[in-house]
Image 1 (cartoon, rainbow, N blue to C red):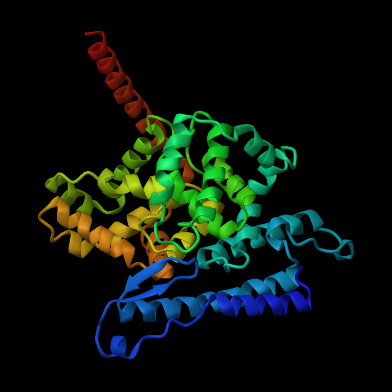
Image 2 (cartoon, helix red, strand yellow):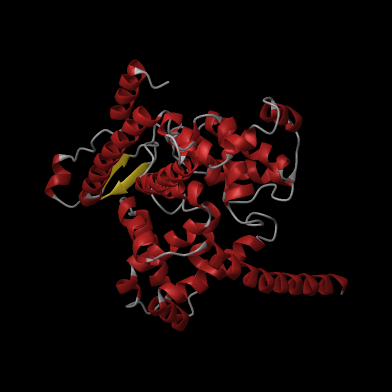
Length: 396
């Protein structure tokens, strides 16, 4: 796959994917709003400064791509899936060398992923590192096609909601908002709704699956990425009927905000601002509706490797980056406007991820798990109380 000829072809494809965004004469003369298409076909609106940022980011992506290609050449195409194995002739210490080599590879890979996976390699790296490939290997090769045949023509609440949401999923996109794009997205979502009846279909999954389709290129790979995301990467019950998992995540986020950004948390509480007003969309759509697509995918690069705690890091970073402006607000609407404006123009993923991991600081999975367990108990009590009240009203 990575012979001299294929490398040349990949390099040409790589260059074609990253055209420089040229400013018009009028745009250069004034700070006007300009429109352009990003790498994944989305129409983006921004000013000249945004265009300059995107050009700088794309140059960094090219440079990062060269690092990945060098590793592919020196360590092998799937170097990130295995430790470097020293030769037997190197004598004693082979076992410890293997362990150390694996550790070094893991550290190298973590740093590389946080700096971004090249778009050309992204489908392969995601599929391998997320566990999607392993999950797919546990079922017959015909599983996805068999599932599609089994559900063809079936009518359920999930299929009806999916059909309702298709035209509203990234409207105006040159492929997603077409008959072909709607059909592909529908097949992925309907197939998964039958794979997991507890989840079925939840609004928000349409945006996630749509972006997976654009990255993975094939429906089947997008389906398995969706499966591993819901079944292994994210916490349970995020997309079930009562959204209990999503409620838990929002409460954990509120606790983390108080710990990591106490001044912001105190100010929001004084104004009566509930973080769910913005965090619900962030956690259900995994930032796909909020951030520019190329920034979202950089977040997903890390998400598929490091797990759901990444969502907390990013959400905290968005608040942290706007701390000074948020502290000057006097109304809830102003807070929402600031956060929406910021996220829609966050074209530099390095800026976001630097704040997310360097300034927010380290958060252990164990610490977050303890907070989740605590909040799960509270959420389930509240949901149970609501259910009892509802049943009581129905009886009357």
